[in-house]
Amino acid sequence: MLTPAYAAPEQLFDEHGSPDHRTDIFQLGIVFYELFTGTHPYDGDATQAIDQDIVPPSELNDALPSEIDSIITNTLSVEQTDRYQDVLNLRNDLSEQ
Image (cartoon, rainbow, N blue to C red; front, side, top):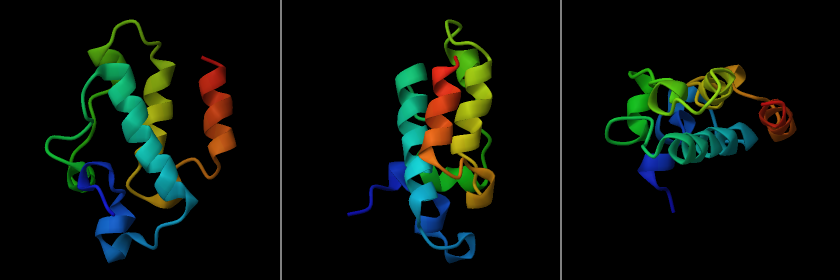
């Protein structure tokens, strides 16, 4: 079952490709954003990802280093090719913070 609040663009719009492992990275990015900020990154649901930029997490939680912003922004890229290509790379970047 698809949960629209956590759906990646490719799950909702054919022009964004087919879901793959990078879809999971997008969804994980939403969960991380919520954990770090206490709020969903988009007004409404993830269908807004196509048209709406996120507020950097460090602007909502001043305890976060600004380096987290680029990590989370990468996970929430609309285009799959702009996201982390492997969850291990995401883990490594997070562990450095």
